[in-house]
Length: 159
Length: 349
Image 1 (cartoon, helix red, strand yellow):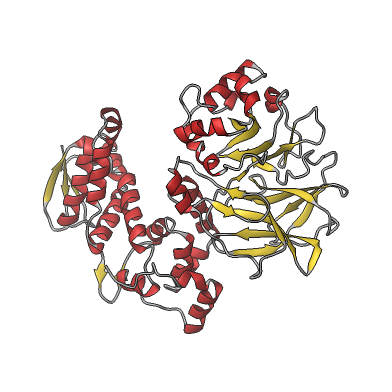
Image 2: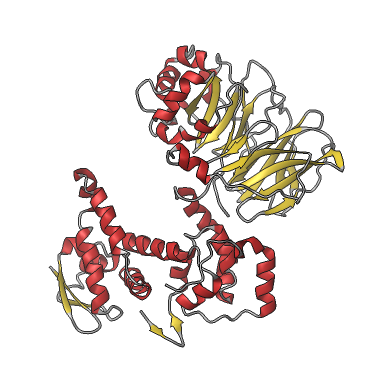
């Protein structure tokens, strides 16, 4: 078992087989740097619980294919990304920090799916980005491909 | 997450690129408007390459290009997975005409990484054949600089990516003029070579050269050498892989998902009067061993012509995943025309 500590000082025990899906922790273990508790200063306990849930489910990816559990795993993944924006971003940041490739793929794809049909305004608001383009610059981009800015599917809501 | 209302979400650039590279081109063109950083990221050539790589592997990205009502059916597609017929039709995108008004005639020569090489004759100057490079995803097009070809001359063309120079190349072969190779880095096509001894297709309406594994392939002019190949990187003439079908009457040649395909009359394909390797492969292709998806198998009875697939050399020939390739033929039901135009769109941006 490996002990992980979130930035709000909560400790979690995870099986080594599960936790080594994180390249970062795998390297730490291989280098002998994971003797006691591994502190994760960038991840809060709420996010860490989600990540551990994922790691435990995906513990034996190879086996799933053999035992026909692939569909089960697919369903789990679909359910897993069914979370709020901010939560999803927390998980992306954590997956990136821990270097968990499959989780990163899953969450970035989910983020992309949610952004796909959004309007520019909605994207800015969802990601809390301040517009620093001048009106002329913006108009120039729109003029280059006006069709990309029009269409019934473009969604101005923020969620 | 590092959020406080005023500062925004602190994703590093790498994560933003990871998310953006999964978006369709239409969204990307729109999101250039989000901020200066997003505009810069999306405009980077590095990002384009990353997006291309991902789109090639993504089964859900649109890859079917359909140009109807011109000559016969022009259909371009890349379907890495077998799509049900209904879905296939849904995925077909209608594309705008390049110059507002419908041209007098228009011919898709070939596609490579989502770029399409188109020949257009306009009503006001029907003698002049204009060569355009078109990106249907961004709806941008560039007229290629006139070359030394006679403007009115008909030619066949192929578009391919040369990994050695990191540039897209066009090989043009005319009836009268000598052949030309154009490099596209300059944007409008620069002549970089004039290979000699190249013959155009003996089929007058065979309008494109198939590009695969660094070489162009087409049905040669001389009847005893059915397939001609030209390697753009080595400027050489690879040979050998097509000897397996020398006795076949090949009707068309094209590429699907990294494989060279030929179309031969079904009667020949059934009997396959060629080498044993080919016979084995052909029987697999034609569904005799049950490896082909049902729609293709059903097509066999109706079709007069049948496709055969194999890799650039018999040793590397694919024998699996034929089901993945069956889809394009479902739509080519007009088999009384002894050819179907199936070309490959590999990219989206």
